[in-house]
Image 1 (cartoon, rainbow, N blue to C red):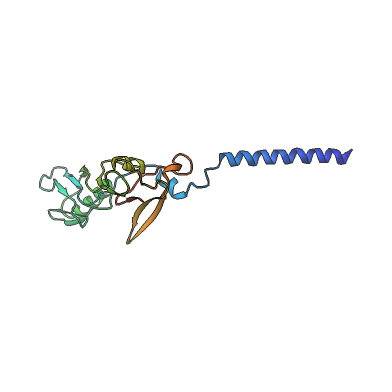
Image 2 (image 1 turned 60 degrees about the vertical axis):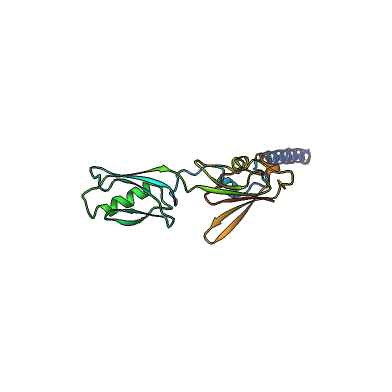
Length: 201
């Protein structure tokens, strides 16, 4: 009798364990979803200044230092007294802090504001089997599908399962595969970064 009870209890435990495992599998993300996609599915929190952007620099009670300046191709801006200041790669708040620190050598407690008045540095390219390949100047955070739509969609010869996003990392290009046919399943529609190139074979 004791052995029968023990077998029944063991059987119930096994069924509970299998049910829990099946529930965990159902809750798990698709096996094809990568950590990279998870990191890029949300738009970045802050815009970083780039070459060709136009900035409005305002210094309280100092009209001589307040002006609209373009960011040069080398990523720097030019201001009176300060000469060249690196702007590319910084947020507007970070650049504000840099300028306030540098201006403190010439005036007491400078109050500085930095506004990006014209975004011109955010560019991505689409190449290959799309209706309108080219380089696109963006004004807001944009996903892969958004850019493919801007390029007019696929041609009849496009291989939708073998799309590549080339992402610049220093002196190299990172290759990120994108499978259009698996959007919403194993493939996330992630946001592009400045300088990305979408290649549709």
